[in-house]
Each structure stands twice: as C-alpha cells, then as structure tokens.
Length: 422
Image (cartoon, rainbow, N blue to C red; front, side):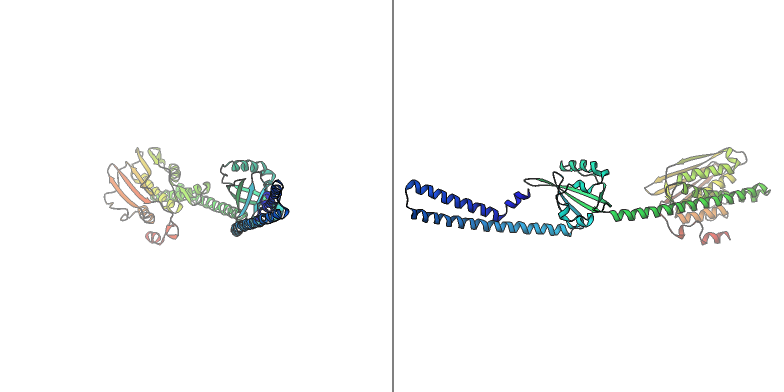
C-alpha cells in the first residue's frame, strides 16, 4: 500500500511518462525513417521536435500533478492538525488489524512512539484476558456491526492497565477499508469514582450504625417506660405512658427500617405503617377485638416527611383505641394509603367507634395533647386535612405533596411544638 502511494506522487508519474515518451519518440521515428528511407538530418530534426513536445507536455502534466499533490498535502496536514489537537486517542486500523496511524493523544495515553507502534497488530495493546474479546469485536466492527457501549481495559507500554471508552467508525476508500477508533481515557475518573464509592460506603455504614443505635436506645427507653406502666396503678397515668411509648416505638421503627434498607434517606411509608400496627398490637389488649385493616399502596417518601406522617397515624389510631370503643367492644380501624395526581399522597384513617366528643370542633382547637401534636405535624407536612365524625364512627382524610424536604423545618419538633406543650 505504501509503495503504491509512493509511485503515485507527481515526480514519479512525470518521470515515468517522460522516459516512456522519449523512448516512444526515438523508437517510432527511427522505425519511420527506416521505412521511408529518410535522411539522418531529417530524423534528427523530427526526433528533436518530438522530444521537445514530449518534454513540454510532461512538464505541463508535472505542474498539474504537483499542484494536485500540494492540495492533497495541505488537506492531509489540515486533517492531521485537527487530529493532533483532539484530546482523544485516535487509532486507524486496517482490515488486517494493523495500526496504520495514530495521533499524539494516543502516544500520551499508551506511551508508544508513533514509529514503534505503527505497523504493529492492534492486539499488542490488549491483555490476555481481552485478546479473544478484542478480536471478536474487531471482526464485528469491520463487518459494520456497532461496538457495544462498554469500558475496555488496555495496557500501556509499561504494562499498566488503562480504562478506555471506545467508539468506532468505518472508513471505506477505493482500495481498502479502515477502522477508526476513538479512545477516551477514563482511568483517573474510574480511580476517583472508586475512592468516592469507598467513601460513600463508609458513610453509609456509619449512618446505618447511627440509625441502629438510635433504634436500640429508643427501645431501651420504651422498655423502661413499659416497666413503669406495669408498676403504675393510676389508669390515667398508665394511658399517658402508653401513648408516649407508642410514639417512641414509631420513631424507633422508622430508624429500624432505614438501617435495614438500601437507602438511608428514603422510607417505605407503607412498611412503616405495617410496623407501627405490629407495635400497637403488642401494646394494646383491645386489638384482640378491634380489627386493623390496611389498604396500603407502595409509597417511598423522604424521612423528613415519613417521621411526622407516621406520628400523625400513631396519634389518631392510638386515640381511637383508647377512646372510640368501649371495653371488649368489637370494631375496626382501617388505614388507607394511596397516590393521587402524581405526587399527592392521600391518607385515610377510619373507625366505626362512637365518634369524637360533641365539643370537638377542629384538630387545631382541641385541648388534647395528642391532637396538638397532630396539628403541629400537619403544618410541618403542609398537609390538608378533613375530619368527619358521627355516632357511627370517625374518618380522618389527610393529603400532602410528596417532596424531599430538608433542613431544621422538617424536624420532628420545632419551637412552636415545645411552646404548645409548656
């Protein structure tokens, strides 16, 4: 291929044509003179005229070819200058897998000088583990099939592994087909990514451990309070202690679900409600006669919404268990969770108890500590709510937008909450 290209330059073509023309003129004129018995002087003059014509014609042809070669050379220099400025390794590979050309970015990536690597088979850059895979995909690309979007491991001159992203295109000329590969070096990015992933895993382990320890500490507090309940004879105080225990257990169950999940910031709301119901079954003997019905759509929410939302459910369900039913009375409490209009969550808590007291007007106006907490938590969620209560039961409907709330405003207790308790 290279010898053929050398023969096609303007000087070689002109010299070949000039020699051929001289030989043709001298030979043909001598044969013509011999046949027609012309004199030598005539032959000499004719040959000289023909030689001059051939020389002029060859010179004109040389000029045209020279200008064409100059144009091609300029185009080649222009193309090479573009390739040299690209910060991506470029490899030109023949159908036989031979490296025909590379750019400076390739030299910087692999460490091979151009003179050393050009003419070598491309598999020189592959390790043993990628040898068969590289040959397989090379044949596919030569046949026009696309290269899979994968990371490739090559080796530089020193034997160090390099992670590259490869893109491939076919260049078809009149004589040959070439495979043009562009190689983007992502080795440093992969190393940085590895360090970040390691650091992230460490932070996730630490956060998971924090959630675990918080859950264990809350469990200890809950256990101590349960011991106090067993020792207490005052029914009113015992009821208040049970309410506090369920609140603590609700928060503890959220931390338990978080450290058991893959995400330390997102909470499966439906599973939290199920866990809360399990805790309530253990706390209240009434649940032997009161059926808890769950109809929960799978919903994931941010922990800063999950905590207040779970506490709201805990307060409403606990209030129903303590006040909506008479002793050993059968009934039900249903919790429904659904999604409406994209990011709007609708929570419905219904019971068939005796309803709220006649003096109850709204959650915000209630003097109950539990409803004061519910009112504060509804404000934190920026939730809309509606209460429908009759002698046949009570229905709480709560709706709020699913968001990723951050900051202290999303905390469980704010200054307004503390002040409302004092």
